[in-house]
Image 1 (cartoon, rainbow, N blue to C red):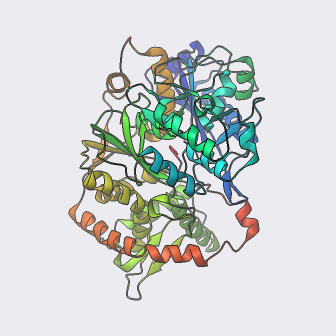
Image 2 (cartoon, rainbow, N blue to C red):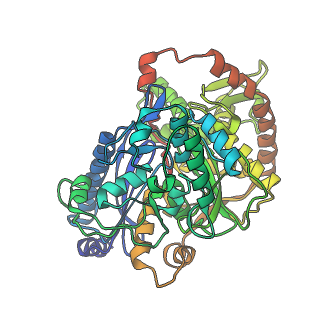
Image 3 (cartoon, helix red, strand yellow):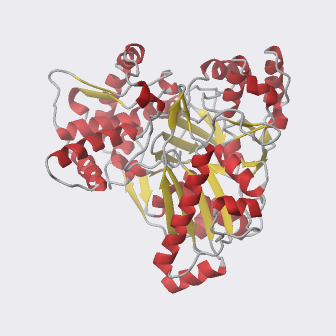
Length: 554
């Protein structure tokens, strides 16, 4: 098998996917059968600068280059050959946010990530004007907020994009975006596959009313769907991607996508009545719809699959980072006791212990809010743990409480989708670092949404692998073949899955926990109001690095 893989790598019969997640940049090389052949990665950290979450563009390229170099080393170690090129390439990244450039291609303001929640006024006004939910993190919300705040850079704005769009532009010279990622900039017209023209015109009017003359359509990248060509790697792009010169100019690129879309591909969740949950720094669910929703809900975003089909998205800013912090504390205690433990072992021990905890968390309550959470109307977050004096205070119940808390905000949004809108699911897949310990978070998610939840080995490489599959689809699909059919017949045929059914005791316990969780939200709001960030230096460099949970996604 190694010899065959080496031949495929040498002949360039491979696809490379690169994903810039919230805590890790990852590169995955897939072979002709779509199986991962090699992996490279680089951990990175966002920064909290002047009360906004950001990453520098220098760190983007440093991380991408290190990931590609690590991938090349993995190719050499596993297969005994040198990486000298790939057959196709694709880039994905955390969705939404705001990257604004002038006519010379210079960044006008530091990258504003999906995690920022300073766009409340903008999101509320645009949602009312457009008649659909416009989340805080969407690019159009960031732009309108900058207009409302009279930021100087708006007058010099030439074009906007997302992180995936930016990296793709630098690699190819093409200002293009996959339809799934584009749907997080401005809503998509499902009939045309383009930006909604009525909303484009209304935005221009709103900008004019605020004293800014612009044409939004001219600022946004063009849209491409999965399978469509999106440019080739230029000489300058190849040097940016791999200064060692292993990747050659001329390699075709597929449309850049968001991490939500690649998560859907990685879990074969692009057909109606399928969905997936991705859990890392953030946690979100994507459910492919059979029909339009009856009305707008602020808990639900309407986006699309990489092929352009409508999707309801429940996006929660806060996922597994607080779990990571507690695991780090327990690991520190173990070291203080003289025991050296592997971080993965710490997670597995703590997660497995949670299976023995009280089904309703026994009077304990936790909020995992490191940042603001729009679904629960919080502009900022404060991690919080509370228990009643007579609570069952043991490790198992403590860990179950924090695992439940990581899923609780998602549950609020899923209730709107499943109960208020009556959306039905045939299957729900889960992926991301939260689900690496077998049978724990998967079981609790099944209880939270009262739906069977499946995990599979193939999706373990996450969105970077999903991006590699999209790159392979762009160059290897049969004429007219749909993405859903390609995944079913060429990628996931014969794949084994492990499925957890909802257990009645867990479902009842999660319901009881949620009643306390919702009732306790005023306590979390009070913490935001009365507990400030006490260490300014820490606030400037606060990060969401995770020893175990990986952003998918995100």
